[in-house]
Amino acid sequence: MSATVRPAAEALLPVYRRFPVCIVAGEGCELIADDGTRYLDFVAGISVNLLGYNHPVLRRALERAAETGVLHTSNLYRTIPGEELAAELVERSFASHVFFCNSGAEANEGAFKFARRAAVGPEQREIVALKGSFHGRTFAALAATDRPPYREPFLPLVPGIRIVDPGHQAELERAITRRRTAAVIVEPVQGEGGVNVMPDALLQDLREMCSEAGAALIFDEIQCGLGRTGTLFAYQQTGVVPDLVTLAKGLGGGLPMGAVLVNETIAASVQPGDHATTFGGGPFVASLALAQLGVLSEPGFLAAVRQKGEWLGTRLAVLAARHDSVVAVRGRGLMWGIELEDAAQPVVERALERGLLVISAGPTVIRLLPPLTITREELARGVELLESCL
Image (tube, rainbow, N blue to C red):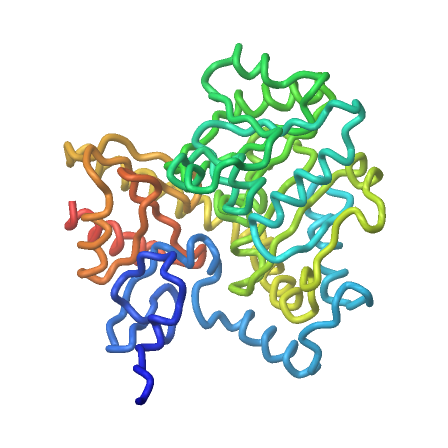
């Protein structure tokens, strides 16, 4: 009796609700499906494909890296690309050292460990996160994530992590104490939580409270960092210098890569054996990341992101004024959310039918994350298509 042959897609564990589109190619800010349909991409692989598709800098970097024949060595041996990438990130940030890993959740898990390692008091072990946050799906990162549907099937989660309301000063002051707090983690712009821009005043208050409590301040810039908000790092617009910054998504230019940037105080507490990874910072992915960072760091490139972001914000405000179904628009740079009175998913599906890729951020928010290379004309076309779906 012959075995039943299943479609290849059915072999994947069904943890995703996928759109009925199979992508086979990309060019610029468009993705191309197997039936030839072209889609204007306002998702960018969820803030991953910062330079769009088939970018010449990334293509050349891939070719050069492949020519070496060395895709992986482990971290038992030195390789040049990872060291150069770390040096560039240190040069362009507050950090003194960098730890490379493979994803955003891993970066946040590493940041929690480093913060606890650096804690002075023996009881300073608690991590404080904020309401509306999303920090990942591994057990500690999930414990710091304010999404009950994600959390409840997997209780109990890692203890020692509490979520507080950033809008209640008294609650924050009670939660962040010298006796028990090792770190506070915050997204400068909450992505999954609805594209909520954290007020600079709040971030400055958190900096002050952490300094008084001897706690580390962690900025999760996994979705909002690396030029997305118009500066290389989101913290650079806030007047706040954190102790650690976590990066991932766009860092590897489309390949899996995460990083934890730490200051000298945190770095001095970490010893060999405290943390590790097999693949983190490998020569192939680091080569691609280094080439991309060169583009992202150019002042003219970042200025263009800010200009396009200002135009997009103004255009979305006009859209909101014309449609009663739009409750609010909010964002920074090329990271925007459109909050609707009703569910966002039907709008997302109508946009797909009309050749525009967008995603939601929670039940009622449409999230816009186009490649940073997008043109003003493409932004205008995308907004027109989106407005036709409201």
